[in-house]
Image (spheres, rainbow, N blue to C red):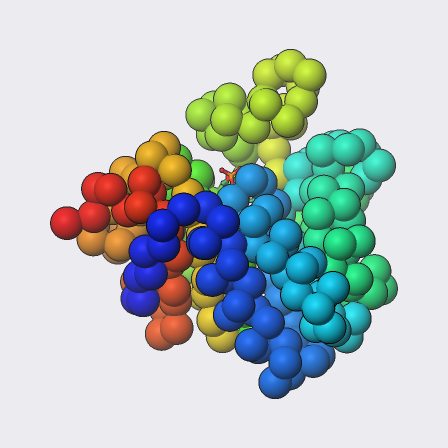
Length: 241
Ligand code: F6R
């Protein structure tokens, strides 16, 4: 696992955007795995600036990591809406090439299987961008998730619902369930790039980088990946030995 320590959040985003830009420059039809939440926002901002400077992302495909169950796609905090607002529009992606799991499907298990099939049909993910929860989750693979799990329905941990309440009017409004790519799905990406900023992520970063590979800290599964990079600012790196 490659660990890169940058001064602050903007530098983390710039470094991660640089890696993505490098990939897209050599492979304009790259397949990206994209995350929501606060962590990748600086990366998207830096990519948008590179787009203004001439980087063409219009042929890139993207697969979101996860989506809430039961929330309308036009709800501003559905990941359909967030991906459109934070990724598709500013980066100039082609909406027809952007995929988000369908948390409104009548048959959620079938929607998960279909999502795996769509990723496979696209030739797999070239680079998966990830954030991390304070409890070590990646995607919404909460602690005790199987290390070989595939896209499926998960129950959000109470601490994750609390953390995400900031995006909603009230904590009760945060959905109870989600669809998420599994840890096995994430490991299939040809490269993984995890970004984390701030002291609140320091424990999770220390556990996934230096602790044992364990479903207690799901992000530790990245130790098994051949090309995983963890980019952190000094605050998020503060508990590394
Ligand atoms: C979001 C996702 C989650 C977040 C994590 C951190 O698609 O998969 O794993 O990356 O919850 O969230 P932030 O970045 O808001 O701290």
